[in-house]
Image (cartoon, rainbow, N blue to C red; front, side):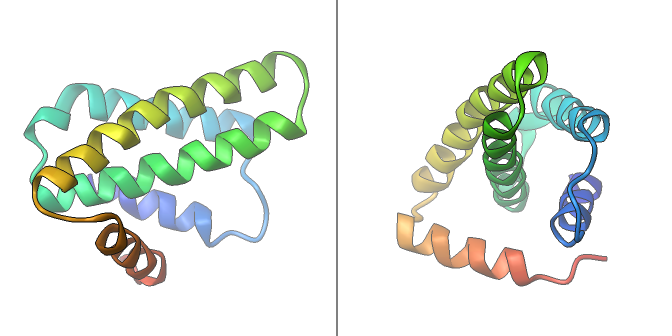
Length: 116
């Protein structure tokens, strides 16, 4: 999980967008990891998974509006799939006692975090 988290921070701190192929490769790596391991995530992993899924989801959604054709459809599908994962992780955090304000506050801190 830490590697995926570190990688998303690297992408978020870039000045330019990563190419579609790199974006899709990262997305597929994230989905495979979530499919394989999500049931075993501890609380910290759930936070990181929510952060990753929310960021990739919103980025895919934005990109789907900027391009046409097959890539637009692929971005839309990525966004939809990650929306489901984000909802799953947010629900799990709510079950652990976190409310929306606490989640938003933690998210802000995660954006500012220096990840090594």
